[in-house]
Figure 1 (cartoon, helix red, strand yellow):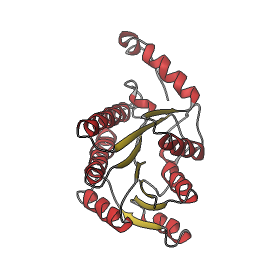
Figure 2 (cartoon, helix red, strand yellow):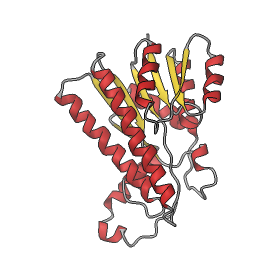
Figure 3 (cartoon, one colour):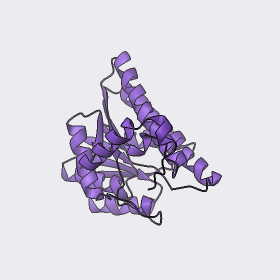
Figure 4 (cartoon, helix red, strand yellow):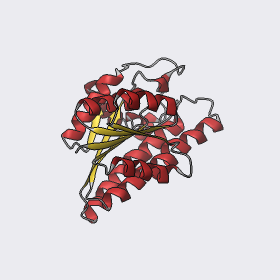
Length: 242
């Protein structure tokens, strides 16, 4: 039986991934803060969905994730789609710290919990949605770009750790650009906006192909290559707007 857990399944890319997995014959455990949205999905797929309200920043989040895994009877695939991010040129500290709380503390708690679970249960696949924003420090979104860089490195480190311990855990780091989801509501103008369904479909394909890192799509692969080629002294002087 194919069994997956999707964190951040109530809306956006997470919900699209959930729908795609269900269409592909998976049983899916879904988690997010908005329980009513989770119940909508569960009612639409009787007998195939387990739901659990999880706030990734809460101290009980790891225990609740393990409870969900128990309800599923095991996990073959874990998809982490939760995250926050805002442009913050005024450097509002509440925005910076709440972003770190979700994108670093919550991310680490959830991914680390599932790593340990899979380490003791014959392995599996872990896919996370990070961002191309982790490529360089973005002045328009300081904590967002920094936390996404953290996610990139953390996944890479866990890949190495899995190999060191000879664990059968595979990772896929999905790095999209701007995606048309509620995360961007009210956040200004975003160029090269992508459809969430397209991104979700490419995520599933990347996991199936066992890709380690997947930048979505080709336009952003070109952009990332250009960003990486810019020397640090020049990048510091550039006015990069989102």
